Amino acid sequence: MAPLRVLICGGGIAGPSLAFWLSKFDYDVTIVERFPSLRAGGQQIDLRGQGVQVMKKMGIEQAVRSRVVDEEGIQFVDTAGRRKAFIEANKSGKGKQSATSEFEIMRGDLCHILYDIVKDKVKWVFGVYVTSFQQDEDKVEVKFSDSTTGTFDLVVGADGQSSRTRRMLLGSDTLDTFRSFGVYSSYFTIPQQPGDLNIGTMYYPGGKRFIFTRRNNPRTIQGYLQFMTKSNDETINQTLKKGVSEQKELFAEIFHGSGWQSDRLIEGLRSSDNFYAHVVGQVRLDSWSRGRVILLGDAAWAPSPLSGMGTSSALVGSYVLAGEIAKHASGGASDGIRVALEAWEKGFRPFVDKVQDVSPWFISSMYPESQLYIRILHFIVWFITTLRLDKLLSGLSSDDVPGWNLPEYPELSTEG
Image (cartoon, rainbow, N blue to C red):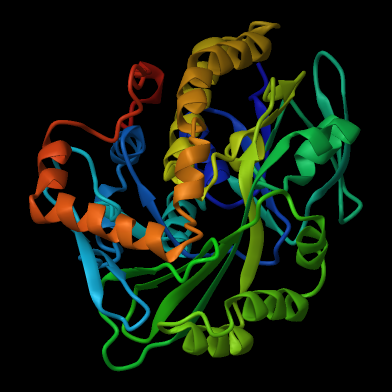
């Protein structure tokens, strides 16, 4: 019997995670990444709940711990930089994590860890992407950007929130899959200066704007500028489709003179070579697959950074998908792929539904309009942390998605 041929589009987090599990079998797995080398940029991410369980099952806990960001917690400051409240990181390994997870890591570092554990087990092709595909009940015929073709039993689109695979799979229906929160975010790094701490710093200037900095190495800090509009602003959306210079000027104008270190951050974003901006929202699909082409991670269910579970859901979703493929499609049954995909979606959909359940009130509260609201917010956080109520609540809860248990798949044993 010929080995299962699997094509994974996207070399970020979800794709290599799936490849890791599938590499345990006699499968022919190929990852295509449209960038010419490993795309190891991006800002700080974290692992929580069942995502930590999967990370440990993959045997990469020590590799992750060796690269975690040393962040002591999150502080709230006013326009003069005075601390108004501080949420300490929970590094006990027990209970619910605080705003700073026990496993804070730069996206690029996690990408390298995943690449290292699969680079010799699956085929990687850089600088190439899928331009079209046709499928029938038995196979998927794929055309690539370098004019080559290939035949696969399964094609997986793990190519992010703006997935090319999703656009090809759904066509005009793609327009209805992304739900904007009306939040716009930019990320970049700037040089450190004396006084920068290994503490995340949150500053609310008002007007539904948010400034956040984090330090992840001795040389630079991460800058985040975010703002919220009352509706999905088409003018802003069009600006985000233009060049980086126009995007930078958009954020510079909106945050000009907004207090604290806004001038420093604006100066830094203008000279930054890793500036990135996007609209914050969620990808929502009624089904993650059509025939033998499926979507995974942000391409299928992007929960948004506000959920705090984007990376974890990518790891968990990849694990469950591989487990169902191993259970149903490894024995040569003609309908094995179909049964595996149905079982995966039925079992994992409840997890995603809960992760995506981000309250509109919570989103709005993250971007306060008035100074009165900001003062009330500072007082509430100060009160809770001063009385150590956050510690009490942490000890009585966890980051696991409630009501959903990570399944066990003997077929995915990390032995060997």
